[in-house]
Length: 152
Image (cartoon, one colour):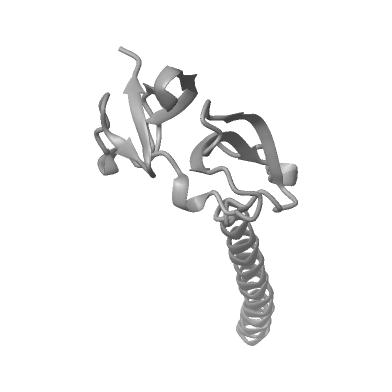
């Protein structure tokens, strides 16, 4: 009788080991899938800020009074993940420039509109990300060749 019980225990151990192995393999496959999906999501959020990007969504664009600069308010359509945060970029008004990355306003500032004297009116706001990388802009500062005026 003990021999039969001992054999059952060995058989149960083998079955449990096989089931555990399948579960472990499933966990590894699931982990790999999640990692690759997260890499794709990261690439989607780190787009090149290009006017020609297929996920680019223009919210507002305004040319300076002297027609030398332009600012863009935009975000990206990340498909099933929804829309990205809003970005503001100030670049030279040149039909050959499509990249907005060099003119990105620092996190915590947004462009409102152009005012007389070709100054860009900006407003400070509290971002919910990168709070430790704060940049301080104030009225009279120049950003990418444009004089700024901050709303109080």
